[in-house]
Length: 396
Ligand SMILES: *Cc1c(COP(=O)(O)O)cnc(C)c1O
Image 1 (cartoon, rainbow, N blue to C red):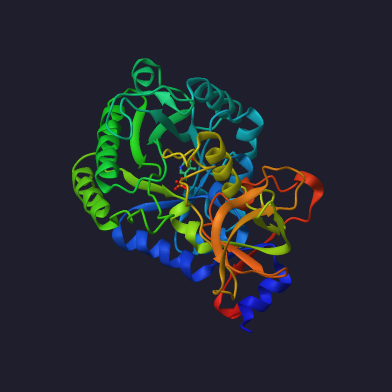
Image 2: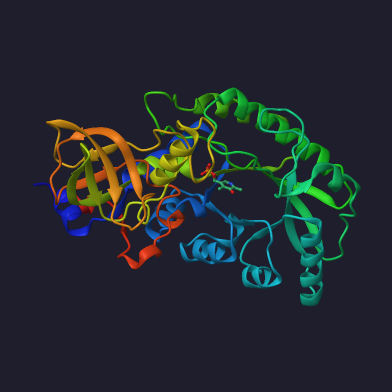
């Protein structure tokens, strides 16, 4: 028996994140898009050893809460590579992160709050603004959003503050784009947006944060990987334009691309039963271990099929995870995989074909590295919670 199987038998239910795979994904991005500054979106998977691995590849952090700023700091990321962007930051949030990151203001009232804080401290600080631009991801017109400040509102607002200088913009409209044309068009629109915002009094653009959008393949049968080289070429063209223009730092954010398929969720089959001819495998910690498959089944149950449109970050696509029984590949049967919670919604997969499994076997669920552990209601029903591990060469 190899070390991993032994490890899983001791530690399931658990998440295992493969260090090699995380590093490889980081380098895929760095190689395809030279000259870009990458931020890892901590909310995707804030497990400290994962965060440290990504930070060691030179990535900064995109943080979505005051605590995430502190977590990024703890992972060794310097303050000038930590950006904090979220709606609804409180005064306490701002106090907690002061001097530890670049704050991206999400509203006009937040800009006023920041001015007030800086005035009290008698400091002049550089901030960014999150913009809800006059275009959507597909290049169509603006849509209303809880995120950022409408481009038109920025144009008429007073952006001259005695204690703030606005030095950058942040845009993030959608996740999980696999079509390079769409992403490239979006990046071009963002650059032009930065040029327009730079014309405003009180603004001097030094960075453009293009947000994420970089998609990863969940289902190898139906999805094609994003053509990173093509995206890289477009960014190269924009960088050339920028060289003679704004001379701004280009920032890209990424979460799932780096960690999604580097992570697998493993849980234990604790019972097998048949009801009205249907075979059930009962596992530990299904929806209270890895929520996303249960959401997919819930949607299918209500819509009749897996919806085409993602509901990020809870649901991406119907076949977003593949299931395996560790060490078994014969005598296939059709089963429902359900959890041990006292609710009928605790389902991981219905009517799927798997090799025959016995009580004690380990079920593997793929694509669990992003929006997995922290997005799951781990406390529900007072079960033991799954552990998380970074799987490195030393473990082999
Ligand atoms: C969640 C989030 C991301 C990460 O998105 P991925 O699709 O996982 O890369 C990036 N930027 C912002 C602002 C986000 O909210």
